[in-house]
Amino acid sequence: MIVVDFFISYAEDGAGWAEWIGWQLENEGYTVRLAAWDHQLAGGNAVLARDRDLRIAERLIAVVSPHYPLSPDSAAEWTSFVRNDPAGEQLTIIPVEVARVERSALLGNLTPVVLHGLSEAQAAARLKRAVTQARLKPSRPPGYPGRRAPRFPRLTSASQMRSDTKFLLILLGIDLIYGLVAATLYRGDGGSSDLWRALVGLGLTALTSAAARRWFKRRF
Image (cartoon, rainbow, N blue to C red; front, side, top):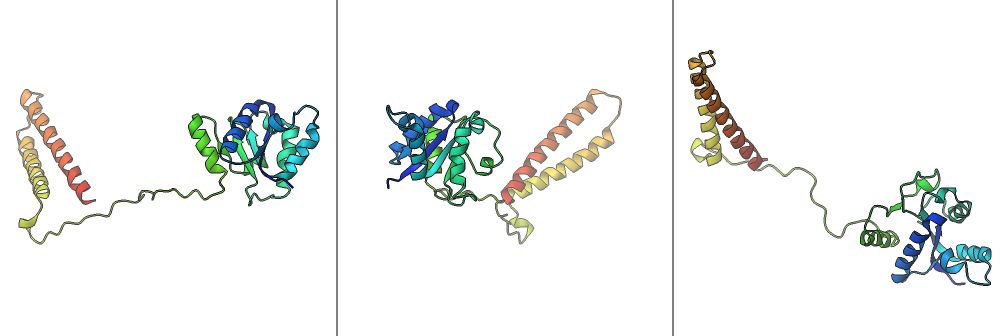
């Protein structure tokens, strides 16, 4: 008996997508059956042809469009595959979402292939990847998600301290001394001297904060 790879199930509003999917898969060497190509031949019996193709297809692609959950013909097609693979372990039903729709209680339990919102090239690549039945392990190693290991400098004496540490300590000392001097000279009358001392203090604080951030990043 002839066996085909995919039966493409769709409702009327998903016909364009069904043909596009069928074309993509046949170009990859798969065999497909869908109503627009195989069940409307002159003199043929569409009902018997559909029954035959459902029996010989190994897997079913459900083109999930807004009208698909409402179509009794579509429901009859995909539920015929549920009978032989109720848990979805053999991946015999592949839901392909071509529009944003509310997922049905049963078909919605199966992980869909979402094509809406993608470019044609992206949709074709996602479809082809989905039908390979392969693991989703990437071809390149993923980046390390954790924090970079800290690098602790070896400081055996004050003379061996790194220059950035010395610079930070000097700035902290200047900030402390300047703060004491500014507090002693503060008049509180809103004069220009108080304003200038405040601006200088803010500048020193910003410089010290930037040096502290650089010091921290280099070690952690």
